[in-house]
View 1 (cartoon, rainbow, N blue to C red):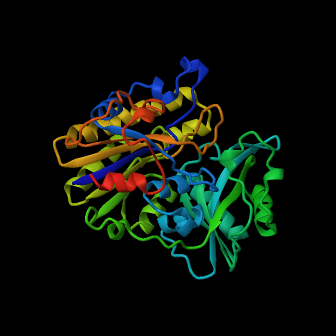
View 2 (tube, rainbow, N blue to C red):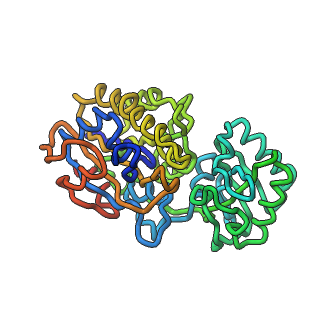
View 3 (cartoon, rainbow, N blue to C red):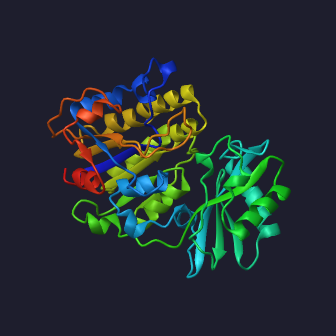
Length: 380
């Protein structure tokens, strides 16, 4: 039996008055997700353990069955692994966004949607002017980059910029003199209206590969994503990273290419694929209701549909879920349960007819916590 998890980042939401008091997931046309929910089994899942902020690094790591209390080290080390930086003893890695600021406030967390080429050029300039034997800026993807500080202390307070849109940025500065100095100096170097914003520091994590934990089910697996931190989670989880041309992390991502890459991986020897799509989360952070609906429909028709049609006669289990809600009216993550579905052609369905936040509460799996989702999936 092969397994694939299709994760729509931030896809869950709250009811929106302009959508006839439906959530974007309820409002969107999602015939394939509804088909799989109707012919599969559903439930809800707590993806953010108590005491943790509802970040994608927390939620995705938990979904894969890891105990956050044992392995969590923040986003920085995950992104270091993704871009090939092998952390050394004493290294503290921290996520380094390029953000947009205006009128003393955080305008957005993505630098007005910088391209990877633009972001790389800016980070390289910062490394030339601000880097030294202790401080190093390392390019990542689009606005998402890495800052490594040798001898750095991870026990500092850093505010995720996507949690504070339209808020004054000065009160949100980290409680660390070096990081604050780098932020202020970056604003003198970057184009007007841009700034670095470091957050989520940590040391190198220790994660048992999924091929060890689920050795009877996963002999070889892959991760497909446009997001560095998910690649990093995959790296430490023992999954190979598959690059897909045109995968952007936005609504213009190559849905079809990701679907085809997953199909080819499963047919060429992989037992497990973790397929991550970022687009709905970015639309939620931007507060763009129409775009969020569109990204959900794209996920259904351009990615889930092709995978289902190609693999439905194979011996495969398909799971679909978000990692956390990113409500468009809040523009930030929230630590609330998410809906999930699990389908294969052998299981008897429950009574759920559509895939959404409300319907899945009536699913046969009930409400799961911790590693229960992954154990349930691997048991099929």
